[in-house]
Image (tube, rainbow, N blue to C red; front, side, top):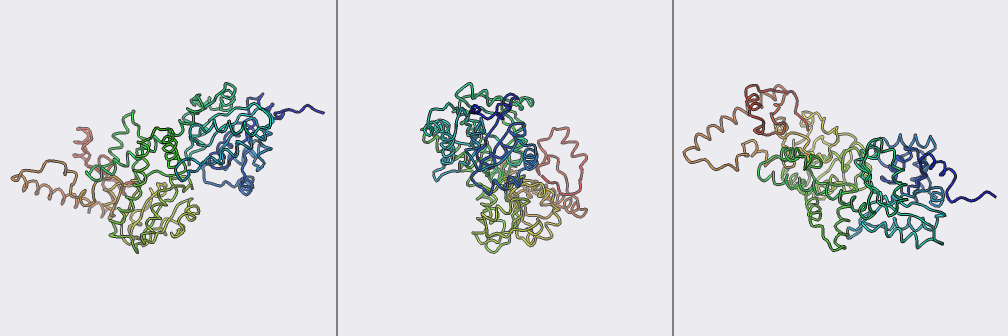
Length: 537
């Protein structure tokens, strides 16, 4: 009889070539992208899931979510024999050197991550392994989870079999996940042994060609890096949203404030985009989990808790702004454009767009919605809305339109046509993709996020409210100058509309341009320019 080997011959061949046999347990967003990309590196990958219908669909290259580039990768790697799908965990464990756990860790009632699926897989792996295996925690889970995985595996073994547990958190952005995996900002590897560190370093060796940094550290540190990263980005979003709310009180423009901040390299411009709040499968869940396990550790995360509270109130402000603009919501027709939590994905988990829709319908509004790819997912969450087949169907006859997700096609709308087919030209721009001045010149009542005070105050020059009041004897002269200026600007705007053109302002943000260099300011006064069409953001 041939000698029985703990690791299949195919795995030994792969190892000689610097490749690995890998089982990825869980074919959700993280698991499928991870498995497909590792197969594209040349590894032999088996993706495992307990959902037989999902596995059958994947075998037919039917992807359960929208992600650019993933379908072609699945098709190619299946065709070349590097990628397969199964419901048989035992067979996958038997054939693989590395077991990656990528099952869901949804939030529980108290915000802590539900790790039951993680430990179910770990216990099963412990019972099924017949030789050394490296078990990798890919699911986002609190510090200490890998240690509990190690205990679970050891407890389920019929006899002592050597194994390692490691943490290898993912940093994939929905909509660009394949690109993020192939060209990551960093790869984090948390291990307790040199053997495990070497295996993971070799597995990610193809990324060395891209000069991708590899951060090798302890398991506990790797687990915390993931949470700390997501919590920081969420906090940055909540911070700029609070600044935006302040801008609305004092007449400032948050886009210019954010640009002025972001040009400082210590701060950076990313995630300084004011809006209706963050959503998706990561930030809401991970911030809650971090706060929960930090509290349990006796070290409250007060800043992260504040970020959560700000975020929870931000989308509610959008609803109230819409109510104020319309003088009430009951009986109003409102079009909502964009339903996924961000563009280029069909993921509606914790999408603020759906929170806004739900609140509008509960207040008595009739909501019509459109999204390029996410309507079926949204329909299951907010069934009372009417889902339209295109943009124009969603906004025709509407009292207001709410842009909730910044899909590119919403940046390229024919705004004159939009205004004509709306019942009332009220546009609530949750993503600040349009310029307030341009929109007013086109006849819209524009409601942005942090773009100043009210439209009437902006037109009347409300940016001067923080200046000292003029002396009594100067009031008449000042009033005369303001009246002359307003009249001149109104005439100019009317002329622009007649020619179907919108004036391009010097600073590009709907402000006075006073931050330009003196020479440029002088030039802009001497040679005003006009460009056709309302400028979009």
